Every structure is written in C-alpha cells, then in structure tokens.
Length: 243
Image 1: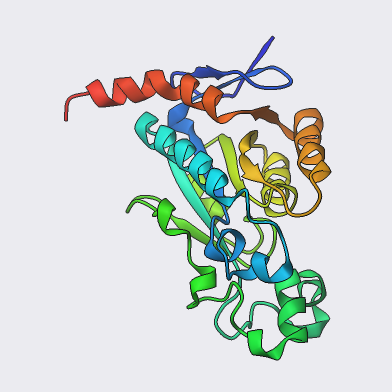
Image 2: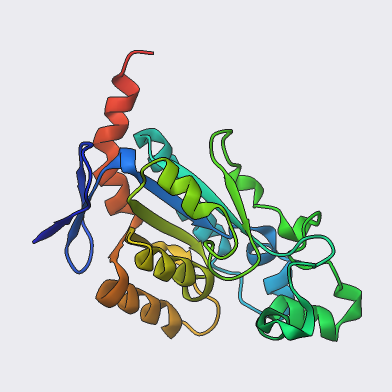
C-alpha cells in the first residue's frame, strides 16, 4: 500500500514506514532543523551540557546528503536556526517556561560566565555549521522555542509556495525535530522523517521513541538512501532541462 500526498505536480514514491509515501518534489520542502555549532561542535552548548558529540560528523554528512538530493531534485530547502536574540528579550524571563526548561537558559543562569553566550544571536554557538551553508534561495527561519512554527514565518513561507509535504532532518530528533513535525501534522502537512539524518538528545531509546511516534501517529519514516533514490529521477530531469 502507498499513500499519495495531494497536489497536481508529478509525484515520486519514497520507501518508508508504515508504507510508501508518494511526494511531489515541486510541492515538498526539506526542513533542516538546528544544524548549529552549539548542538554539533566541540566547545558548544551541547558539549557544555555533557551530550556525546561522537555522532556529529556522520549526522552532518547525512544531512548534507539530504540537502544535496533535495537541491538536485528542485525541492525547497528550509533551514531552522534555534536560539535567542542578543539580549534574550524573546525568552520572557522567569514568568516563561522556556526560562526554566531550556537547558541553555538553565546553564547560563547557573554559570554566569556563559551568560548570553549559548545559542545567542551574534555568537559562534548560534551559527549554522559551516558544512551546511544555505543557498541564496533557502531561508533561515529563526526560532526561540522547540517548534519551528512557534512565533515564526515558517507556515506562511510554505503555504505561499503551495508546499504540502515536509521532509525532516537535523537535531535533536526527540526535541525540536519532533516538536516541529508534530505541529506540521496539526497544520495538515504530510510529514516524512529521515531517521538516519537526525540525532537525539539523551538516551538512545529516545530516537526509537521518536521514530515510533512518527510512524504510528504523525507521518512516515524513511532513510537517506531511500530519499535519495526516490528523488534521483526528478534530479536527472532538472539537470537535463534546457537553461
């Protein structure tokens, strides 16, 4: 059995769980979540918290494969950048849950030498990793909460382009990736998680839990190779089209 996302453009079938999902590249966006120094590089925010970054080179490479495949196939790429404005006005102070539950905020409160240094606009920590530079037509949507739809222009950007399917990769699978994917489902997008191009924060069972949740309740789950193979046909067509 296969599920087909709505639309009028030509579709390709992506091998996925629980069943194949047919997406239309012209009506699909790849959402690259929080591929930033703070989450992936030594000396960054996650390193300061104590998360293992051994996965980072492979995660960056896998996300890079997704980005390259999407670009070649004419799929819109959207980068998400997580963190806070330079003065942390978007945090809201102690009256806001993020003040208490963001690990970056908690760490900065407890270690004054880190104040305004973790995933904060204008810092190295906040920047996207250099391996994944956005192209000129690829927006960087800035967010200050886990979901990339919360308080941002993401939904407007997608709907203006008649996007109906979203492919997700990035970090952290069980936090910002899953939060954004869940909200996308509630906004009527067809959601596809590229399981081996994401990584979790915390124990390894959380990655399995996210994949299970998505597969069972919120969308479809695939792998990098399956995504690449599915969109390779449109990519060849784009390459062959006259300039």
